[in-house]
Length: 232
Image (cartoon, rainbow, N blue to C red; front, side):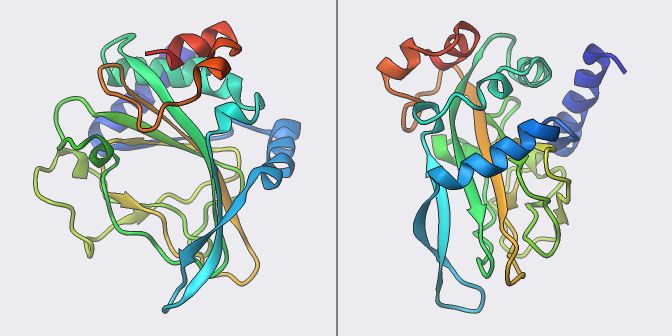
């Protein structure tokens, strides 16, 4: 399957299901390097524990200001092809990047739509196209993301108890989520397995970043291809 037909397959899934999974986007030494490096950047926050109480969650926002390790992923030709089809061609920007670690004992967050960040309901074009690159395996036990297929087409409010599927995938695979799709991270039921993911999003160009993807001084030093999709 060539890149054009490959992109068309994933675009069709995003349009019909509200999500798609691209396997093995990051492999081998690159994946090992990302897994080793990301722990240096993570900071602790208080997350909801399963069954009540709290656990020490871990995350880091603002990766564009911290590392150049993932620059080529943000501008990966396949991802740009998919984003260019879901949005109007050329009418999107990178909205920022972060690492999120769903730690052992961390509870699920509420079912939600990412488009809510911009205060918009679902429509023919999403406000954003979110991505999660698995740095660890996404499994039922570690809290693989819950998805409600087709919900990006619905106009009713998000329901917290709706039936869902789990986006189980191997480390190095990437999940793309339509901004109007109902989804949530799952519970990490394990005692010792983390579920780390690199998250970044593409958003419509006419929408303002909340917050900006990176300070102007950082943007000025980015590779040209990346700078072109970060600047407004």
